Structure formats: structure tokens, C-alpha cells
Length: 348
Image (cartoon, rainbow, N blue to C red; front, side):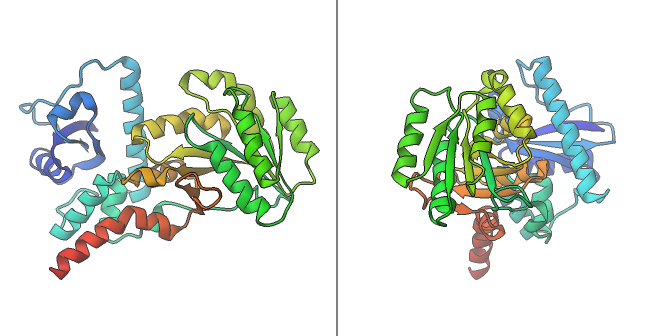
């Protein structure tokens, strides 16, 4: 299959260019806002695939400065996209002449950074619920207690979110809870967590090694909830967290949530998720919901990785700025504006 990128001011305009050049059998593989280095070519980059030879006359846009590693990653991502399209649609044709209302809705969803395949399916009447799961339970299924670890990059809001969970599910339920901090990377991080835990009346221990963490989990076996805070590991710090990741991934009781900022760029979010695979997170928890207006990436990654979304967090209020993820909430974030726009147009 040949792949070609089209740059244009709108997704619909790029689709029209592809239709003229590649025909109606072309596959819409990927659509995203253009990268800074190619933004002068158009606001959106849309990738199409076709088994037919490409027209040799139009020149495909080139991105300068690409490295072999970047090209390999891009090709791998394209391959995954094509495999997902094939699996989810079972060979169905995904590029066809859409109705005007359908096209408008699809373009709106893609502008909200929803995966093009999902956007087209939803625009044609599929339920958004088919593409993601939610699970706001704490702890492993069948376990006698909840041992919850939050992992994620620096600045994602793990510590504040951990305290929110401890306050809502430990303190409010009047069940014994314990906080364990394995974050020995940040200066005064443990002091901050101790102070917050003291205000809530919840115990807090600092563990400096993975072995100490395993021992502390066992020592607090009588607690109904054990919440584990972990260091925020950047790209260059992942090797330092290998032993901790190995323990968390292999421990039979730990329910691991990967904490991600909803305001991250979709490409950055995908890279962070890939890096944190060594922790084998079971669920995604999204913070800073109030700091973005585009929510498609949340659903995209949950769908691609086949993992449920557990909680959504907004501000710093403890424990108010935290809610369990529901299909209604996530669906409203992604499709609400589109529905409102369409309804307003109909009323006019």
C-alpha cells in the first residue's frame, strides 16, 4: 500500500484532494494538526493509503530534518493504524462520498482530535461507546483490598490526584487507608505528601527502594486501601525507574493507573504511553480536563491500547476536582459541541 500526506486548511479540503487524485477506494489512515515544521503547508496533515499508483505529477510534501529513528517510528505508527483499521472494520470501505451533514460532523470530530476512523464511524451512526471502556473501580478484581499505584510523567498531577483518591475512597468511606511514597527524586516531594496526608488523617510512609515498597505493602495488609505515589520519570529517567517498574508490573495486588494530562499534544501522549509500558498500567487516568478543549486523544489512546479510562481530574480542590469516568461524561466531552452545532443549524 502506498501512503501519501495531504496538507490543507481543513480536513474536508484534504479529503477532496485525495478523492480527485487517488479515487474513492483510498483509505483515510490518519489525520492530525500539522507539525510546526510543516504548518506552512496547511493547518492539517491527512494521510491516505491506496493500492493504485500515485499520480507522479503532484509532489508530496517533504519534511526536512527527518532522522532514521523518526522515520521508523512514523512507519511503525502507520502500520499500527492500518492494522487497527483492518481489524475494526473487517475490510469495510471507509472512504466514500459522505453526505453534507455527515461530512460536517466527521470534520468536527476530527478537529476535536478524534481518530479519523472512529470519527467517520460515529458520523455514520455508530455509537461512540463501541470504542472505549470505563472502569472506576480501585484494586484488582477479586482482591480483598485495593492497592493502587499512580505512575506517569513529571507534572501530570499524580500526587494531588493520589490524595484526592485517598480522601474520597479511604477517608470518606471510613475505611483504613495508607499512603506510600516512592518518589525520592523530587526535593521535598515526600514532605508535601506527608503534610496533605496529615491534614486528612491518613498515614504516610516514604519508601526509598522497590524492596522497601514491597515490604511496606505487606506490612499494611490490614488496610483496606493502600495508595502508592511514584516519581515522575522523564524520557531520560526511565532507566532509573526500571526496578520500580518491574515490581509494580509483577505485583499481583497492584492496580496501576497511568496518569496523563489531557492537555498534552496527542503525539506526546502516545510517546509517554509507550515509555510507560514497562509499568504495565491497567487503566488510564486523565488530569487537567479543564485546561483543554480537545478531548479526542483521550479516547484514541484508550481504544488503541484497549485499556479503560478510570477517573477524570480538573483543578486542585481535594477531593472535589475528581470524578469517576463515565461513558456519558466522555461522550459529552467529545461529541457535545458537535451535537450542539448541528442542532443549532437545524433550528435556524
